[in-house]
Image (cartoon, rainbow, N blue to C red; front, side, top):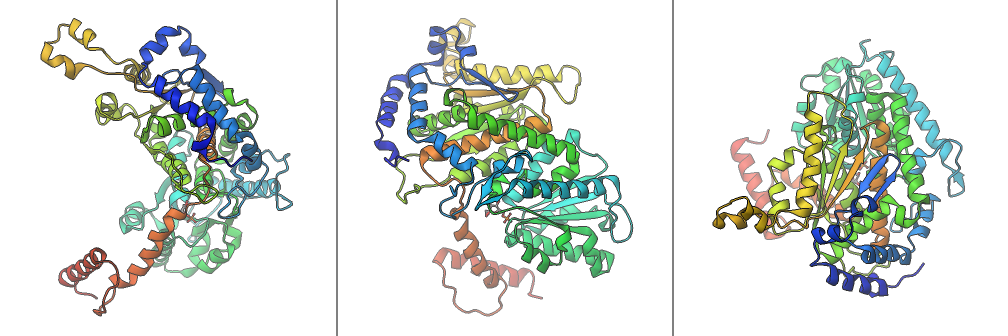
Length: 548
Ligand code: F6P
């Protein structure tokens, strides 16, 4: 594979000059020049319709972006991922979340072993367990059935499960209460459990490594809470299950390996919601729903692997992100789902994209001289319209938006859905075409007010339109973003599957923990700011609550 630095490739230079030509062209002009643009610049795959016509792009820049992808050997990188090559180079691991949704008939080899039967074995165990809990056959220590499920995990072991639970609540078994605890702040655990009967509560300790400080702290508190209330150590067996790759640590914690659901080091934390980390999702929607979700993921995997680049939805979305990040210097992408059930989708995508592509070192160890991942953020529509959309419409920054909407509502009520869809279509229209000062003046607006009421427009957005939010369509949408993030990483020539940037803070926190509970006044050896903060905490604690 070619290793010419990205910004030294002729196609990159070509893109720079195409940007210079296009940057002053407006979406009004682009649409006027091509009456078919709205239909032409759209794609349909696996039940997802993508309208990318409201982007500041034309045939030449799109064609150059596609050539950039080809020049970066994207297709070979896709094959390398799907066939289990160790593309996570800094950790020397395969990256095979796609194997988690592969049909049982497929063979995918990691170090000579077909991993697909392993995946289906765990799925079968998860299904049997879920059926037992959902039917009430699984009894707690006192003989009561389980009515509450608390997933304890953080990062990929939380954001995927909580997002999927919220997204698929419509399909969930409503007599099961689902809670999610992530933060090491005790409030998270205390508030999640304060109204729960321990005799009816099952904890899922979800941690790939089973060493994460937050999760282990919460897991120990959960065990203490349960034992204190049920007054029997043996209760742990019926009230705790684990999802992890670390069987040894799970057993050491006191969870029977029969109650552990495994996965593998070739599943990254932020790519794990369709592994056993999705146990809470399966408990909520049932094994059949989970299977449908995997089917949605797989359909998008196949599309990504086989569609030509110009018709490849994750590729097109990734190229647009690169176009704005590296040529327009856009700093963020707004994720704006027009569906209340997707309220945690932006938070989920934050980890997926920013932990994957928030990197500054290339695969070859050089410093990048271009922007990598933009900042992902967002809130469901229409709420955001009455909060931060002002800045997207009239602020000084360029913020490409991803609108996500469904043609069919899951909850039919009066004209709510027509209003919801009218709003999402209107927002994309307003952002793209704005309102000129002449149009504002023609409405009889007082001249001094005209500049304030003028919308410059030319603000780009994608529209993802899906028929209905189902387990399948959710899986499809997630895989779409996974592969878009992958494509960005390939072009930026970074390792999208490590996360060294989270390590330093973890190590420093471990060093500070004992310093916050000490009673001696040995000198602190941090910088003067950190030392002062620690000393202030110790003084306040000593004053407010004498150490017990
Ligand atoms: O600290 C970052 C991280 O490693 C994420 O990548 C991961 O999803 C999260 O922590 C949780 O890790 P684990 O599942 O091992 O507890």
